[in-house]
Image 1 (cartoon, rainbow, N blue to C red):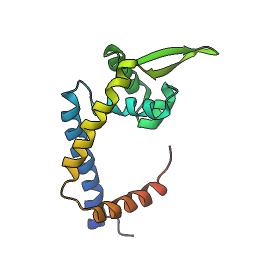
Image 2: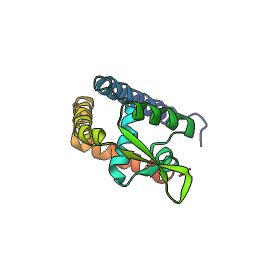
Image 3: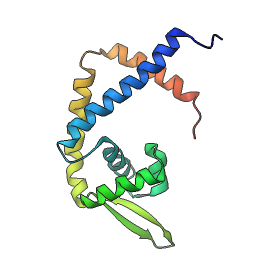
Image 4: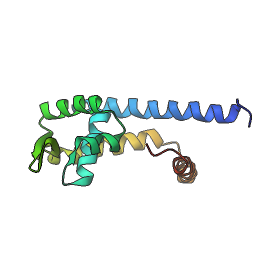
Length: 146
């Protein structure tokens, strides 16, 4: 194995560029609605699980450290988009749940991101997306899980 493989180096660098471009575009569109992409990821995780999650579970699902998550949760609580509730059997932990306001706004945020996806991927045909997804799946199947 050559330590410096130009094609793989270019791929890895470009993957990071694409991820940054996606985050930037999504953040710009979501900010109009008072949200960031990172905050949306928290809301999306809560929406997918339905019952609420403890902070550790949210942090793992969205790939952030505890202190970063706490800041995200504080902002979401200030915007009345989440609720924190102590667990009855262990008061050291809090369950995080979507507020009624968040549940009403989830479709709005989903529509914003659907438009971002459409704009971002407008020049990419279905066949190329399928190939790309297969590559991503292969990369993820050989990645450390934690």
